[in-house]
Image 1 (tube, rainbow, N blue to C red):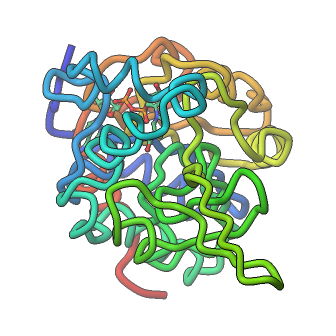
Image 2: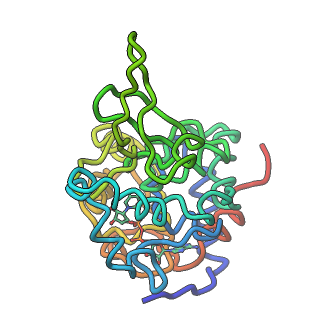
Image 3: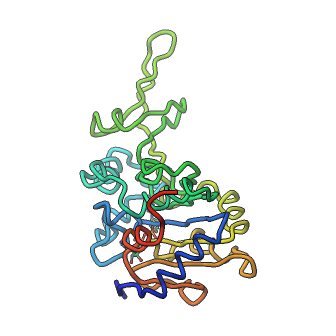
Length: 257
Ligand code: CNA
């Protein structure tokens, strides 16, 4: 159920003082972090996965079986115009500011849009990879967004010494259903070692990310959850705010050091 209840002053004051007290902050973000940048999330009422044909096609199996059908659907899902013109919002910028305030911050993100890095966060674990990169499954050559967007079905252009072009259809760096997530151990460590865990804009419905917050050390870590909808982790949060992430974070992180 979507709440978007305006946060109370008491909630905001609590978050402000916990942010000030903390030295080591870990942030776990999902698609709800980027909706205020104009990128739709996955499982909300207007989420991307309402289109079941897209959901069913974003699998490792489909990429290998039918890459020519996969790529246009992948581009509709992760490289749509709203993705390409998106910029960091007030929430991304507030998280980046925490570093300027002297906090040690690790961002674990399920998002593939690169907006945390664009905002200035320096320690970002992209557990679902990046939509800005694709690789050749044969020779491993890596390509950026310009090459990915230059043709409907991006192929490897690497040439061997005799001038023969590799030509294989590329694989996106984005983690697809059926593929393992990245940086799992580093994420566990960052969650276990922090004194403040911020969980922002994620439905926490898909494993293994859904279980990550359970690895926090409850005796040593305060847990804040900011999400419009209810999540299975709500009962475990020390501070629960059902409101827009960008608005809440912008109001709680000071503008400058
Ligand atoms: P999700 O499941 O769509 O959840 C997003 C949550 O954010 C929802 O509960 C919303 O209520 C909430 N929300 C939306 N807007 C806001 C806002 N402004 N402020 C606060 N909360 C908001 O998205 P998740 O990232 O949790 O996705 C997990 C899905 C997407 C899994 O199936 C993944 O495998 C899949 N996936 C995601 C990405 C990605 O880029 N996020 C990449 C690859 C796969």
